[in-house]
Image (spheres, rainbow, N blue to C red):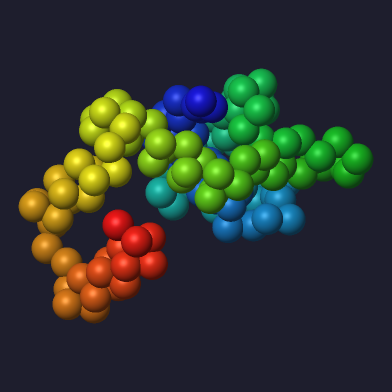
Length: 124
């Protein structure tokens, strides 16, 4: 199973890049991250370099300055995270995961109806 072991800070960088699929130059990304992180240009560059080495960020070298893009889609990352949580915490049982959430997190009537509809469609 693919896993990226993202730190919270790496996830912060990816989240900013996911918001701009066309990518960003270093200055744009630094400015986008500064309000939440206070990071300097050098700090952002360090994260980008490290994340590119992990295959998380693509450096588009055909333009100057270079543009940076997320190399993994948000949906792909979320799917890997879900599978990892399911395996680690619930022994691979989706039923155990759903039961645990429903016991501790209230859901609306609309969410309950949607869950019933999904289960009916799955012929569970």
